[in-house]
Length: 109
Image 1 (cartoon, rainbow, N blue to C red):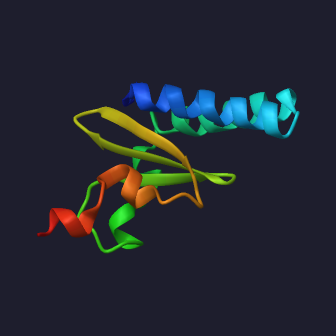
Image 2: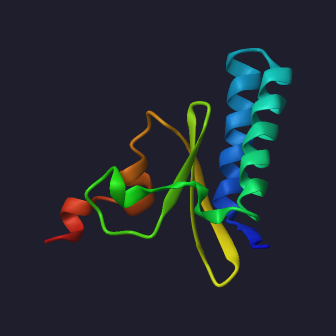
């Protein structure tokens, strides 16, 4: 069984998701249901950390990040030594590569 470690950014991401759906869509129940669904996916990683897709298979970047899809959201994580590190939870249409890695073209210079 793998231990789950959640970054402080993930807590912010979840709060932002819940707040946005509650406020903008006026649906607190849907917001709570979505956050619960995301957390359930995260907890599933404690038994099956290899479930997610390697990020390097969908973008041309060498990384050990993996991701899971939960509705319109992507859960980014990596694992090693019996620990799963959850890094971010981002809306799928955001520029998640820039959020995760910054400006890659600048880093290559």
